[in-house]
Image 1 (cartoon, one colour):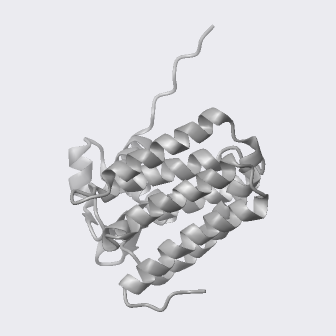
Image 2 (cartoon, one colour):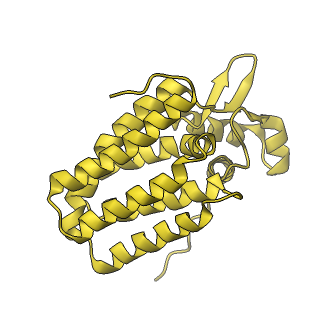
Length: 224
């Protein structure tokens, strides 16, 4: 006998709605989340909204300040650099471990995503779309990693960085085109069966270049 699907709680529904709006750029950095207003819009009481905001705060997408309220988290340069540096090492290791297990269709999907990113580079650059494709590209390459613990760490970092990286690409108009070319090199290494350290180093350097260009754009000293 098939069980009826479990209904989504009000808190879960509010959480998913707010999270989607933040990650898709509808609620930008510094946007105030007025609990009563959101409750009226989503036809719920303020309680599930408050619960949803707490979850978003725990994920690092929202900040809550007493006497101010909840706001979409802005870009903190130090936090960005720390997270990108961590991501560079984790993603480099995961891609290196995944490379021998990547099937031809997964590599073809990664190439297709990179071509879509290449098509976006130009006068009408869309940082939201570019960031989404960039995340999909790296997920495709990492998903075959046999180390589930490493993948769990990576997924948490991807979540924390999704909003910030959208802002970082917008701040570096020359970076997207270079990023696509660096993706070409990573794909070439994986396709050629290059040694794991070479793949890992290429991915790590790719991430660190993005981090350092962003720091330079914000007037900060690049990291080594």
